[in-house]
Image 1 (cartoon, one colour):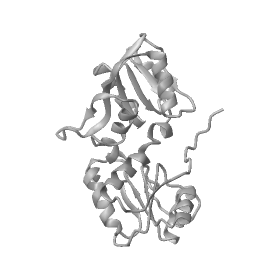
Image 2 (spheres, one colour):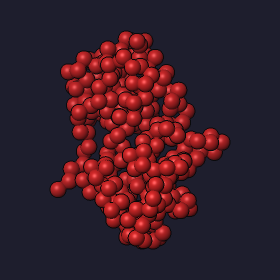
Image 3 (tube, one colour):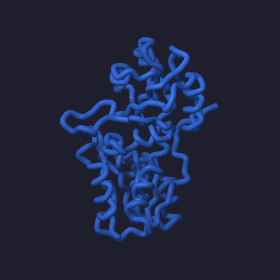
Image 4 (cartoon, helix red, strand yellow):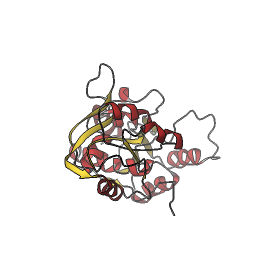
Length: 260
């Protein structure tokens, strides 16, 4: 099997055309015609992850976050990004990223989050104009109303969050839940407009919490925590497409945030 066969299958699932304008998805290093000996799946691609791929004999890394996000003007090894790229190229390891294109598809990152929360009737929170079931975030309902504090505790446990920052609890029970993997503050108005009781996401700044206007509970679980199951999502897809192929889930915790 060659790299191009894998990327073709991925891009049928999460087309590159669905990525946001600021993003950098697709093949970042490597030759698409090279044979694949093994694939390592990770949320981030770091030097440690490349070393893990080398140890496993995998010559392709598929990550959610692109290691090259903005333009590189030099590759001297001065930054972790440059060192990661150098190590990958020296060891003939291809790096592929599927980021906001996977966020924006119906059965992508946000669908996985909904499934982990056992949400029903899930749908895109902010659809892209003219694209139907393509867009940002997702909203769904619990099978039955849940006591608010218990639900927030369950969310913290499910995503193994080091902390869960949230706005004031507004009512005893919640039913409708909005989610967004990664940074989702831009979807707050959509979550409120669609009647969500809780909005689960990450990267809210202090003043943005005031924007809840006591109409919704914002639950910030952390960026890594909100997307940590993405590698399992990609693995499930690839195992179904290529059942006999060597796939490895990275054991490296790439979360740069630590908690006391």
